[in-house]
Length: 77
View 1 (cartoon, rainbow, N blue to C red):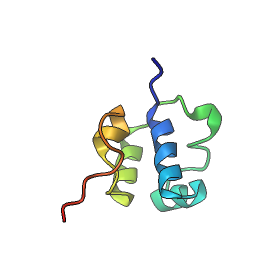
View 2: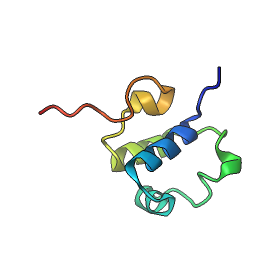
View 3: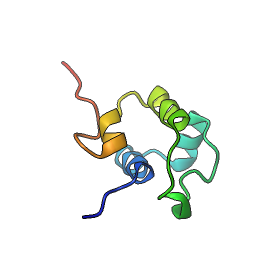
């Protein structure tokens, strides 16, 4: 069984939401190269996770970290 890494899930989120990597990096103030293909297996620090959640509150933190659940938080109507 292959598990996606946190960075691979970030890429899934960006593709799903049609967000350009350049825009994501600029909005989160994360350095260029963070999502380079040769670094997708590396660990994501808690500082980067905090930046991502601050800028994209719709992302489900449980999904981002574990892959469990839905990508986006459920919106109460």
